[in-house]
Amino acid sequence: MQKLILFFCLLFGISFSADAQSEVSINRPYASDQQKTVSKARSIALTNTVLSIGTGVTAVALFDNNTIQKAGAYLTLYGIVAGASTGNFYAEDYPRGVIGMGARTVGTLLMIDATREVFGHRFANSLNIDNEEVSLTDTKMLIGEGLILAGFIYNIVSLNASVKEYNSGGRNFSINVTPAVVDDKVAPVLTASLRF
Image (cartoon, rainbow, N blue to C red; front, top):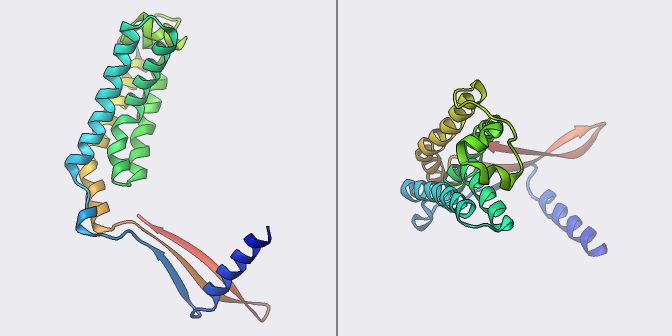
């Protein structure tokens, strides 16, 4: 515990002994070998989507083992919900990735009662959901399908902007320590900023 306290004292002592207004910036180096490409981002997104869904559905359809069927069903859900966002995550564009995941998550939750109609009885049984019959033209089903499709399209289309922002250094984080006078005493004020 004493080493930890000593570390923080040393850390703050060094940071406050600098100028009256010091700044610590954390930015990525942008060497040419660290540039990310749209084709790689798109490849990652499509691979994580198509391969996960295909492998998951195949595992549920071909194997009678309940553990493998459950793993396949969850792998399919991963492909649907998170797969297309991995391209944005590759470009370190977490807000766009999470927006697409959110749309697909809501769409998936709206379609939970239609699992049997979309993926079949084995898939629904492996997840122990969907004991109801739903029409494929049900309003919740149509809205869910639209949200999932919109989330896929949003993530794939936004890859260009995500990679461009990463390569140009469009996002950065900075921490500023500035002095402030409180009751005739100088006190340090710590501020952080994240530029989108």
